[in-house]
Image (tube, rainbow, N blue to C red; front, top):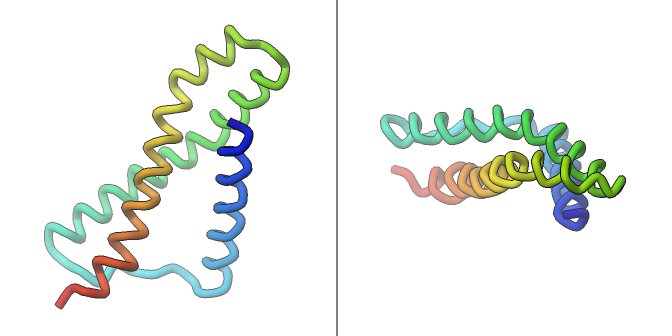
Length: 103
C-alpha cells in the first residue's frame, strides 16, 4: 500500500506539473464518444477527490497498527482507488491515443 501511495503521489506531482506547463487539453471528438469521455472523466475526478483523504486515512490507520479500523475503511478505499487508477488510464488513452486518430 505504501508503494502504491508513493507511486500515486509521484504521478500526481507529475500530472500537476504538466498541467501547470501546458494547460488543460480538450477532447476533440464529438457525439457519443465525447459524452462517454466526459462521463468517465467526471466520475474519475469526483472519486479522485474522495479517494485522497480515504487513502491517507487508511494508510495512517495501518501505520498506527489500528487494523480493525484499517480493514473497515480499506473495504471502501481499495475499490475507489482502483477505479480512479483505471479510469485515469482510460481518460489518458481516450484523450491522447484515441482522439488524435479521429477524423
